Length: 500
Image (tube, rainbow, N blue to C red; front, side, top):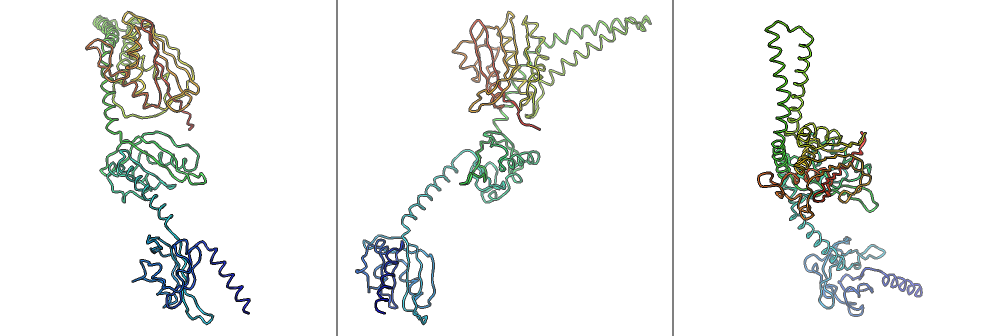
């Protein structure tokens, strides 16, 4: 029996020695009766230094005086799990520990002591503090960032929004977190479309669009235009679980750009005025002559003749011609809301020359259009693209004061590099045989208020507006020019590959 007891004791000692956590036992007088190797490592005490000593004199826990769990266990037999305490090691250093306390009982269920298992939390606390520090730092970055930061979960609910986002929306953080972004912040007119794209994104059917603009509704009921940069959030397995977006409020910029485009459009109309007046004046003069002839025949009661019918048809044709000229000019000058829709670039070019074509002819400029048939569509705003083309064409005309040649070509550019993307694009080349541009001025061409024209003949906004319009369409514009030879503007606009 004695041999069996020794074997059992050795077996238990081996178990205690191999345990990762510190372990000690006490009797009913709180004297330490066992102390394993892990406990020695954590506390710095050797087993022989602590045996038969009161536990509270050795470990000096912050719970020893008023909230001693061991004392409570000895009195009630109650076990307590995973609570935290601070003990002092041999050198007096504070050690945070996670503790579990249980009663030791005889075979008759009498309490004869208690057992305590504790784990050193120093490294875990350090990591948590580091993580908390990084989190607080990230929160500070989010707070001072002058862009909206918002994350949505798989259901489209807001899981994070920064200070700037709250300021723009006009809500407190707690009023936004947990809300469905589309119901709460997206205007009804675009809600269905935006939500549909999000659902496709979550299903993995489409890729996140790196940049897009859309309106949001704020607390006051006003709509603001936000330019978003987006990415998807994935879990460890690579599954899409939400989105992270940064947005910039560009409402005022869009208004300023719209006014700039409007003012430049009016300037273009001013340049066109003389040519249009001349073009309208000719048919009006013809109409007046035929009316006088008809009045004369009316007085002579000779209206019912074949000649009269032909004169009336000519009046109708000339009137329709005037109407068409005026309609094209009004279409060009009207202020419209920016709308992206499928656009046929060839039709934009035809609409542009329906206004400016006669003026080109008056300046002794030969126009040649090489438009590719069955040109793919692009997503764009018809009026703004027309504005850009009009500005380039008028510039080209001014660069050929003694006449010349203007060639407009459309084609498809396969895998064109536009920004950081490679995509198929429509290419528009507008080439003139004008005075050309020096290499020095070429670099400044799109700078606002830079102009090579004589004082009073331009404020230098035309090509700046062109550049802005092409950028908003996520395209690019290139220029090749040689003084005395001519200039070619090449515009690239991404093809709309989306199927209905």
